Length: 331
Image: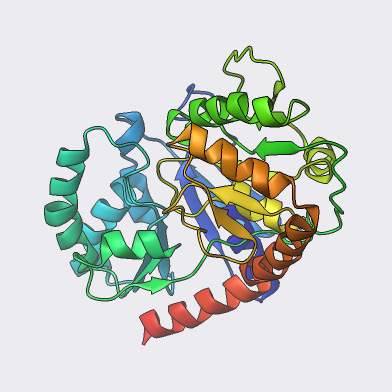
């Protein structure tokens, strides 16, 4: 999201600097030099310390001088630290939530308390608060004065040329490795689905989980060419995720004209070509998927609707809306 937005802003004539961390929070590997220019975007990688969920990088303060507006992505150290410094730096700030910090439910009570106290106070320093979906806005509505919804941007041309022609009923879950993605529910649903459609296939991308199940394929992290091939073989993109701030995997499938089946409450639920299926009840979900897969004409119509709906995620559209938000913040 940050890379795509920064590139779009450079193309619109702006000078953009991205401040990020120097090392991966997952495995500690260096992410690149401390300073570089990538695609016209100045990148500053900062020293940091602390836990994975709240890495402190106070060096960001030195980058504020001369900026017209600061756009903070996510609600972690940068949100709280820059809010605390706002009486001194006085640079207009905008925040995008990206799912807040509720991607995992544990410890949900502590997170809810933090939202009502520390986050509520920090948000007072931001002139614009943006949610990437309606569920995100719902979480923020009680702690922010006003919240706009701007969806994440997606490169709609990346897979926009794909024409799905599945040879057999195929379900695809993009990036399903994290526990909150609930690949276990997808596997359980698929197991029951194969009783009705023995040729059904479930493909999981992302880090391998070691699933051994008839008709289930774990393909790991795949390059674009391989993902495009998989999308061309897909009947339905599926998400059983417990929580999504936006849902990139589903959105990318939509750009390829692949309809989606998502758990009710998903950030993209209700979008064109996106159908609600309650994967928390695998038996019921298997029945609903069997009905969908037995209606190819309905799936083709849903795929066309998904491709049309995905157009609102284009960088041209999203960058324009953010430019308007920056202008409001600077006023």
